Image (cartoon, rainbow, N blue to C red; front, top):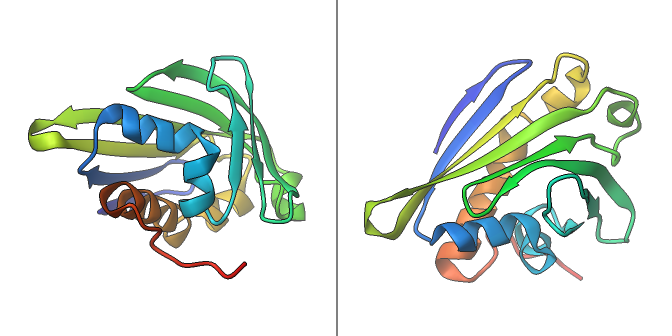
Length: 154
């Protein structure tokens, strides 16, 4: 995995041995996100203009966002505002763009760009480095092995 981090634009990339549709589904379907996205359950239709919400393990709202663009299974763009933290919740929304590029041998390059973080410095700090890397490592492990990277106690 490679990481390039800046205050206002963060870029993360990982190669995953999976079909593009499987990766896209893992981004927008709750049966996947709950197993790799810090226990968060996503709720969305994945359609441009529709809501995309993340719920924590206690059904608390962690994110209440909007799908900006959806081009399955190649691209998914959403607004991002972290509601799990009071300081982050007061910041301006940012944007997360997921792109999936198919490569030879059943491998895809998944790129996540988290940008428009100018008005969200606390969010930028909280998702940088291990924040997004934990999510992407978990997604990769889940799709390649069928098992979550981290086991969670009930």
